Structure formats: structure tokens, C-alpha cells
Image 1 (tube, rainbow, N blue to C red):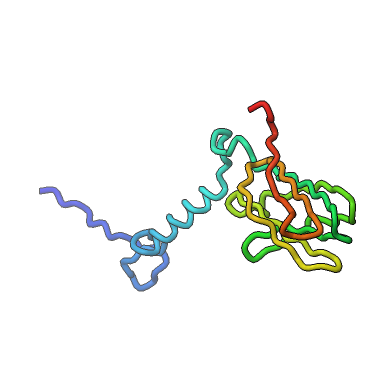
Image 2: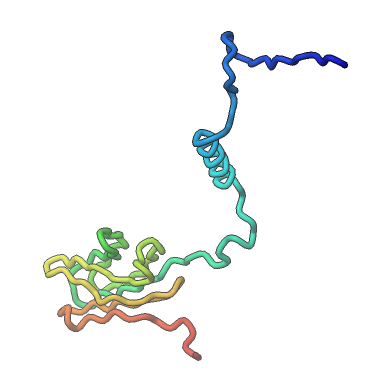
Length: 155
């Protein structure tokens, strides 16, 4: 009969002959490591050209005609935030760009601080990206109008 040689495994990193592996990726620690690695890879991945939205949101143009107030300071308002658009002196007209971040689900609402008068909130308009709105300020706030302007009058 042939007698074979007995092989005794050698464990790295343990003087006492422990049977554990120091670099094992099993169990909960391995799952956490792999989850973290996958998260890092996905976060660093570059988007493909088809993944991005083809049309970025465009700012909305607001034209304000101040027909009766001494002066007016105009703001776009969203829940909890006011965006200062600009100042319109009496008997003047001004154009303002409203950033897409100032729209709340596509809704545009303006707040006007009048010098020597009461503050005024407009009604809410649903605005498309790149749309145009017109605010006509009159002496009495009830006579003021806030409307959208159709970019293509032929349709």
C-alpha cells in the first residue's frame, strides 16, 4: 500500500493556528462592501446621450406694464420662496426672465410691492417652458390683469 503525505493547511496572519481567513467577504460585511462598491460605480457612471432630457426647461418671460402706480417691485413666488424679478417705475414697461426654478409645477404667480399702496398678488397661471406672460398693473388692483401671451397667434 502506498502511504500519502498528510498536508496541513497554513493560515496566514495567525500564530495560534486560527482557522479564519482575514480577508473574507462573506456575510453582512461582504454584502455591505459590495453594495457600497456598486453604489460608487453607478454614481460615477457617465450618462448615455439618450438618457438626458432632450429639451431643458427654458425661462419664462414676464412683461410688466405699470400704468398707475408710483413704482412697483415685482417678485415671482413659489411655496416658501420669493424670487426678485425687478423694479418697474410708474408709466413704464419692463421685461423679466423668470427662472424655471421659480415655477411650482409649471405654475407662475407674481407678488407686487407698490410704493405708496397695498401689496398685490396675481392669480396663478400655468406656464409652458419658454412661455410669455403679461401683467398689466392699474391704479386699482382689481382692474389689473395677468395673462399668457400666445407665441403663435395663427394656431
